[in-house]
Image (cartoon, rainbow, N blue to C red):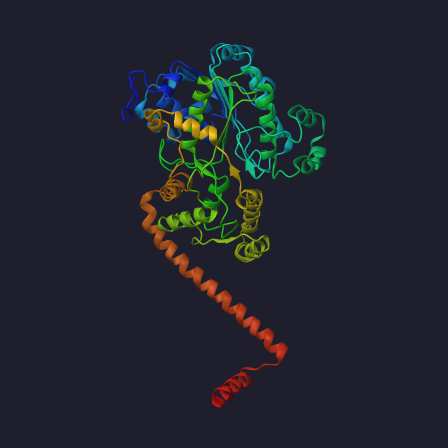
Length: 522
């Protein structure tokens, strides 16, 4: 199979391609956002890879084989199908579940993995910020522990990379590429959630979280202690990406398959539903494209395998965006809105307008004026015509979304990334081209343009041909929006004048006379 001809390589490929040649890779979380791009990139850019095993479970009425077939129907695999049409035999599903003891593996599958696997990517995690503590601990903490136990039995293991998050230690302002002590040990929290009634555990959760904003960051931080403790004597490394968003260039531009975090905000604004957000415009938006993130992840395994870890702890790689040119949340929203107005969605229910509030009180006021009051009017109209009111219900979800993301959009962190930068500098020119992940001089305007295009196509399912119609529709919405806005302000002024007139005994005639006399005297 020929190596991608747009990259200058030797007959054996680049150093990273040579490393993956003949390797059997095991991936958890392969059906997730990051996992899909990881699978695609390995198969397309490392043509001599031996095989990829995916840990999968039955879900939504589909068994493992059906889910495997559905996985490769995603449009991101179209380029792979064109460039490497015979890839399918290299991918196999292994029935299991990260939430189960022993990863839910059968004896035969466990023996197969122990015998075959040489590289492991532990990507699986529950990323819901409001996940129940028991579920978050089971998947995010016990899962990695079970994985490392399995890895310890693999005689041919060359690298195992645990994917954490740059915000695992978000209670600190400065986050270095090192381990920090958790507030409770992994073994203790696992024992606790297995011995306490779930309702009691829910009551205990706020105290357990302490200063942590949610169960996700809390459990991911403790999972790092699992890697530190149970990864000893293993070729293990830890990768901490920041907020992973749409693809920039590969395998297609602007691909996204979820509406979490900043993406969810853009979708809400693009739908005409979100009109205010609680954000500090000056705080850094640590966003990293999913394709760049996967390239860094792939390079990390190569680095771990080729550099014996002589330190007491496994190496950590912080991967964030602001290497030399940061983008703020204000920039992110302004630029995305600029591009969004040029190509609005034909499915939007209102014009694009966004008022950012850094002050909690102002955000509450804006939410009442821009979300709650319009929603009440819509629900009243629906009630009058005999339909079920639903606008307030939608805004309850939107405000819940805002509540769990505000922590990250109103704070600043300083990340060190010496290991990640060192890794980039150690790549050959060919690998830098094939597995590009440097955020130096990153073009945020171009990237956000592609993000908006991708959201329109992959999330809203809008064909590009609908843009002219959507623009005309948006222009009508804008006229109506301005009429309502100025009409509302006029009503408020009239009411205020009426109140003041009652208080001071003004009348329109006396006021006019007073003004006339004043002019005459002058």
